[in-house]
Image (cartoon, rainbow, N blue to C red):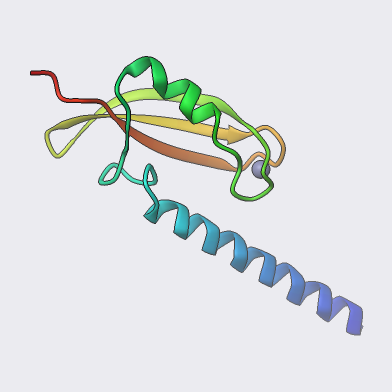
Length: 100
Ligand SMILES: [Zn+2]
């Protein structure tokens, strides 16, 4: 009985940690279209994205989607990733220098 309660508590705390990490990630650079990771060229986007590690388990990501979007009049790239190890999704935003 006691063990079950503790397990539930641990599961709840793990879920809270997970939410907390997700929240911090969204506030960090690259976590939203408002604060994209700035790169010099489009060819750097995928290597950069794939060089990130999972915030939950430290695993490496695989690329799920890479699309161009316009955010507040500026072109951004939205890259969807998925952890190879735990399957956690992650979306990272990138921006390139504006064309003159
Ligand atoms: Zn993971």
